[in-house]
Image 1 (cartoon, rainbow, N blue to C red):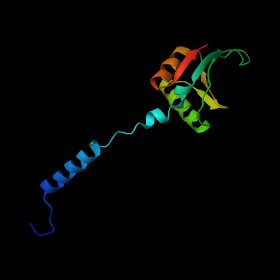
Image 2 (image 1 turned 30 degrees about the vertical axis):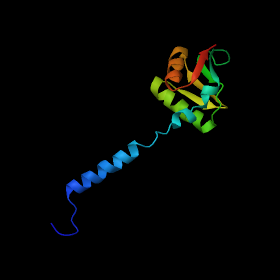
Image 3 (image 1 turned 135 degrees about the vertical axis):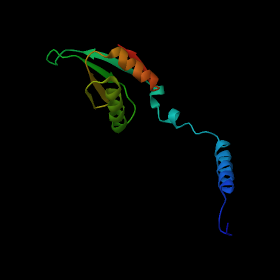
Length: 115
């Protein structure tokens, strides 16, 4: 090996020391900061009126931006395998999915109740 060659042992030692230094730093908790729903309770309601006989589950009471609401709606629709939309600070999920929505929101860290 020449002067400028680095052995794999040196690389491994550098990686270990780098890992040890990041491990000792206090872990950030961005999840608690990005979940402002802990301050409020979301309301889950069921509607049939004015929808041509079709049913819908409505989630309201969000204190997050419209972009975050749309992102949450997208994830929820994918997880539940249903359609829906997000606008005006509310999420609409097609069908009577109140229990499923409640379970999803609780696992996502939100406080919610069925009205």
